[in-house]
Image 1: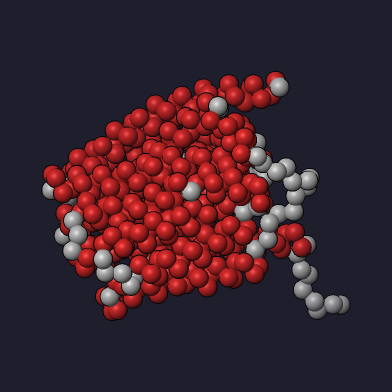
Image 2: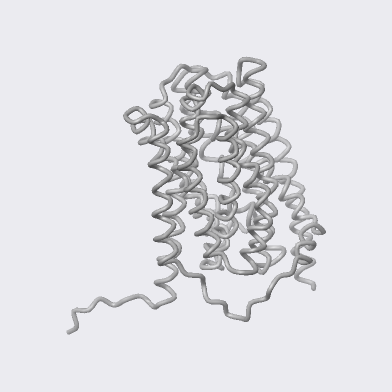
Length: 406
């Protein structure tokens, strides 16, 4: 009787290693990415900047990240996602370390712009890499990408305030970012791309014009604008709302952010699973945005801590519930050949929404002295999203029928 342990087949082993490493890298990336909003009250005080400038600093990486989405997706489809993902994580982590050394506001903004350009190489390649290993469960696979990010937010929210209290925000920020450099090289060593079943079809720049001419891409892009505008409002400004307007400490705000991320992480995957089971992504998108419209409207008027925690928990469940379904629809209609480019196209508009929200809510706070008008605006944006999701249901159905007939 042999005592050797049976090893999984090479392709299965590669899938396990690759998926696990991508999620691990997202955990590490989520730690450094979430450090900016959580530590923003401390950064703002250290750099002596206004809320508007703080919003611009938070939005800088999002701006360059947005501009890099279509090129990153195109390069992923043409050359494969594995090495692009490595370059993205390494570059993001290196420039995040640099941020901890900078004491001048505009140099900090420049550093964030450069970091965001590298971060653009993480998203579309990472999503494509995961989805390629799970062709039958694409929405679920895409949601796994965000699971790692929210796990990183939980780790950061619990440990970040303690590190910053002990060593200052700069040293804490640099330590957390340096972990990403190590993770990037571990990923490069062990991650693998899924072997292609057919010869690679090299894309030309002209292939991108297919995206601009398809109605489903424009409706999805509008919804992506809504999605990340809402996510950014909470991701960037919820800690400041809790610290500045509700009088909580950074550490207590960290606990609440960790709680929110703990609710969002599994719901993100659950939303992908529900969408795959129902085969109706627009229904999932509509329901989630309707709930978010209500929570955004109630948040600025809720001062009781127990009610505030309940409201944040409900909001967190639905904040990214429709992430996988929304990114799935273009791939359903256009096919996997353009998966990376379509993902980058959609995420470009998502990050335009995120950039505007990060900057605008800081400016609103400076002018009005409150976050109320900002979160009411987020509620209105969600209502617009509900209307767009209804349009998407019709456009998607027509596109799938047309595709079947052809």
